[in-house]
Image 1 (tube, rainbow, N blue to C red):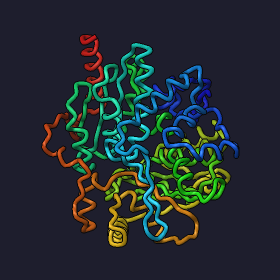
Image 2 (image 1 turned 180 degrees about the vertical axis):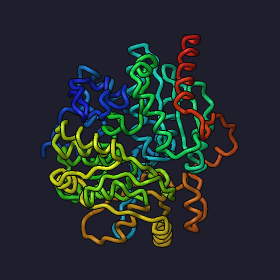
Image 3 (image 1 turned 60 degrees about the horizontal axis):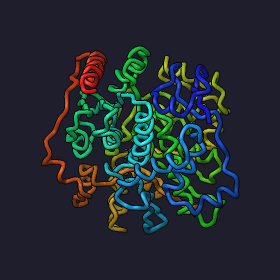
Length: 471
Ligand SMILES: *Cc1c(COP(=O)(O)O)cnc(C)c1O
């Protein structure tokens, strides 16, 4: 499998090259040059696979054997998933009223990002040990990516990680999961701004080719193809757990922020998995407007909501969706994205919109009040606590009755969001994170009015200098 940019200037890249990059050089995102379709016989065979076996089967479609042998790939996946708190990695909890909760949060940091970042961390480590190379991972987070990425790489020799988190916009637990890590290779900044504000200096750094190649800068935000690839597996796994027989349809409702998760769902569908996808969002509703009527335009600012990991302005994976929906037409993708980037809005052309609506059948915007009501109702009926993001998906179920078999992606454990749990009048749940409050913290600041881009560049230079001293 070879990879290309959604905007056409790069082609024929290896998986390794794509894994070790952020944005493509032309500003696009990387995608495989084609999507292998899963034939019926294979679809049937895969239905007996465990979650790790599905990750392997899918990764094998997207990483050539000449790049990583089967035995090594299998080792990477197994050892990356070993630290999950349940052996099956992903579990489905069946509640009353046809509410099937797809629990993706049994990793170390209690959010679904552990699924992909653990394996991506393993893949990166594999290549680094072969190449004897040092890299710097640079990411911004709205809460869960940062901690999952840090867990994936803390203490690893060839990697330093710089994380920017938006001060006061993550939950206390999310913040502590990042600021209590004291390993030398982890550098955490609290930034006085929103998660979109902190994306700016990061994008500036990645736009600087000299900086990127001098320091081997990479991103493991969901712009990174490796993450999307791994996430395709949980759609297959959930499908098999829920379908009445292989081939029968299943609806999967996905709480959506930057659209990395649902993009993986769309790829699963494109490969032949018979799923119907629904996206739910909080008041930051750009995705919903785009799917509903092709109105892909930024909101004027980010609204803080209870589902804070979805408080984003620019869902960058929509570029991948557009690319998918125009059948890999790089000219059209580039035109649409150019217009979006210059005007902060673009109207998605009708034919592309039509295909998008085939991929994602419905969407819903969910308010904070609806989130708490849903958390309360589900708790009252099942004694089961939803995280606020997951509640957006279940709210959809309460609004749109259907006989279809439905799964609801649970993106995080409610223990990460005690503020929201308290708002729903549910007593606190701890899930093993209560000790974080007693640990020492380590972090730096980026204050309003400072030049964040320069601060980052200086930090990066400094890391490289120190690394040279260490080696
Ligand atoms: C990241 C995250 C989301 C959004 O996922 P996307 O792939 O960005 O759409 C939703 N819920 C939680 C808890 C998250 O951490």
